[in-house]
Length: 154
Image (tube, rainbow, N blue to C red; front, side, top):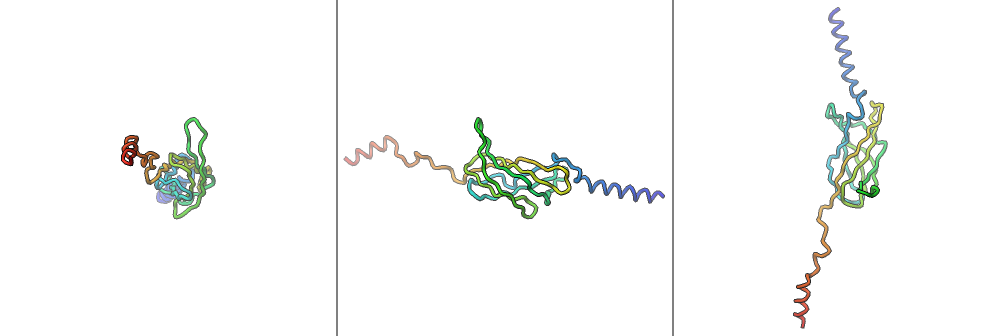
């Protein structure tokens, strides 16, 4: 009788442990960029992982149901970029078009088959150029150089 009770308890415990993800809350998940720094261009690829926080495991079966890309601006309306989603080997892949460098937010809504609610998150992306911008005055001679060159021609 005792072994039957122990077997039943073990089965119930195993079933409860296997169902923990099914009853997890959306706050138990986080989207994170594989590489949060990208260059401004058309057609950049960004890889995003969806992490189940209690187990620290990557969720591989999430399906993206909504996306957005915006650059918040102080005192102005946000600048929008375009984004298109796809999936490869456990990561969510996005093709983004950002017109300028700065801090952008990738807005993602995803559905996990075992979850009743959708998972929503904002992923910060820092867009920067690989080369520093060239100064407009970099090749312009200074006032003293202009005068000395003018005197040399005389």
